[in-house]
Amino acid sequence: DGGITQSPKYLFRKEGQNVTLSCEQNLNHDAMYWYRQDPGQGLRLIYYSQIVNDFQKGDIAEGYSVSREKKESFPLTVTSAQKNPTAFYLCASYAKHTGELFFGEGSRLTVL
Amino acid sequence: EDKVVQSPLSLVVHEGDTVTLNCSYEVTNFRSLLWYKQEKKAPTFLFMLTSSGIEKKSGRLSSILDKKELFSILNITATQTGDSAIYLCAVSVGGILTGGGNKLTFGTGTQLKVEL
Image (cartoon, rainbow over all chains, first blue to last red; front, side):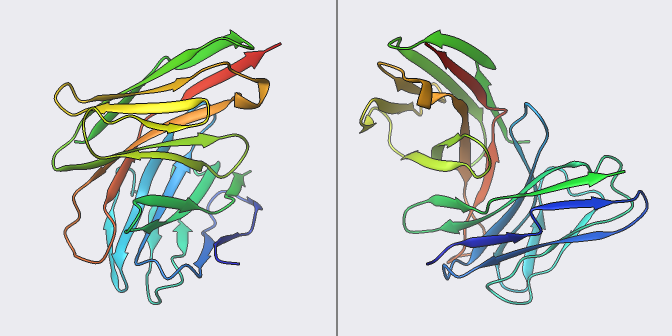
């Protein structure tokens, strides 16, 4: 089945450690996105990529980094520079013909 | 900076009530407005609106866009407990590259709770 897979679903890390969240899609979509969701809030855009080897900062990119070496993959690294990394992270890809965003199941990161 | 504002932030209704959720936006190079429902984890797609005044309908849910006044509403009639969720509005603005997607900005969401 086509879809988006995020891993891990849950992750605990100590302060000062970098962590990388995986996002893989087999929908053949060009554009992919990373959002952060805090309790009781909407989704805030971290980074997005419209095509392989290209990506743009979203509204809250500080303390995060991404790469887009393959069409299927868009990993997000949460660096030690991110001041409040504990959050729910959602990856999505964009179906340009329908305009629909397809989401993964999310990764919940807790920094102790 | 692109801005999407949803209201109310939260709402509690009784089963059978009708609710109207609002989404207003201020963006450059508007392409479309999307509504999503989020129950536990991944948001699920409801509607995409690109043209003013054309209602989209799916069962008890319907939505309409007003591009002159820069807002959209999502209506849910005869609400059920299964409608309890966060409803998210997102606006897509024009992409720079062809073949790819656009920047999508989400509002804060409306938390709807439907009680018996």
